[in-house]
Amino acid sequence: MELILWRHAEAEDAVGGDDMGRALTRHGRRQAERVGEWLAKRLSDDWLVLSSPAKRAVQTAKGLERAFEERPRLGPGAGPKEILAEAGWPRNERPVVIVGHQPTLGEVASELLGTDDALSIRKGAAWWFVAKGSAVQLRAVVDSEVLEG
Image 1 (spheres, rainbow, N blue to C red):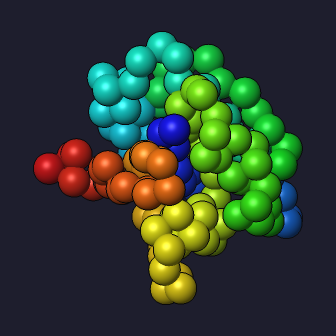
Image 2 (cartoon, one colour; image 1 turned 60 degrees about the vertical axis):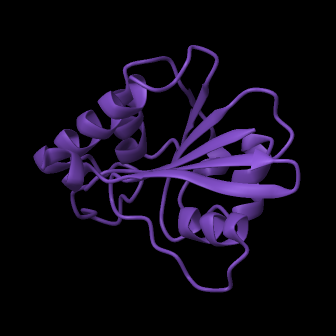
């Protein structure tokens, strides 16, 4: 199985405690477009794209320019177990992109890589994992700032 963890891009600060309604900044929209374009060139049509329902995650997912599903269980505060369950890891026959939030995506990455170290996925970045039997490989890390180059 293949799994991409894509952290939402840079977003505005919460106003009045509305964390779910935070939109991407102009810079965040560019981050989502760059990473989305990079991914689109490499993903076949069978990939399932799942997003947190938070506005910033939905806007990031739109950077891929393909259909996606919003899943409430991927929202802010979700735990690694919920993320992996939504993805069907490691037995899903379809490859999956999850668009979500820190620190949870970093916790999932730590679990997949078998490390106790806390990992942080940068805003707008995507980490691509592949499960081969009981082994997990990190295929790529895509950072929008590097793509801007």
